Image (cartoon, rainbow, N blue to C red; front, top):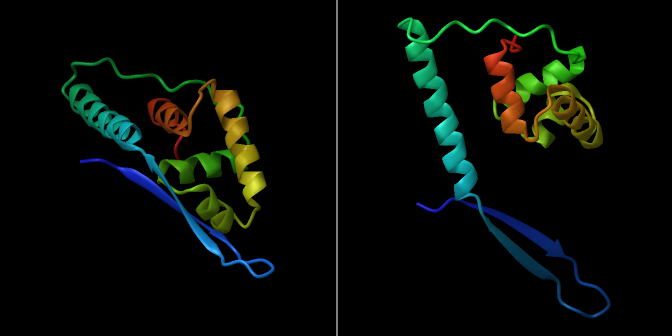
Length: 126
């Protein structure tokens, strides 16, 4: 199976020219495989921990995240996209992006997925 992200850009007509549609197709199968691996790892880790085969992780000290950053992180953990987060929290897209960048920096991670994993591992979810 090949996972794809498809974007369609509308170029409106101007001064006697026809409008155009541009289709941008990006493979995201690598990202999907990583997400599946993470889900599998988390479920296996939970099973091992429940059986006493893994030491229980102590929660890390409270991160220096603001309440709003924690809300954004929680929505990221539910799979919400930037636009959905902005709509849910009644904030702009730019503000969501700023919060997301602050979260990544404060947690010392590079991607949203890593931030969500960090939150799960360190009991940052509410």
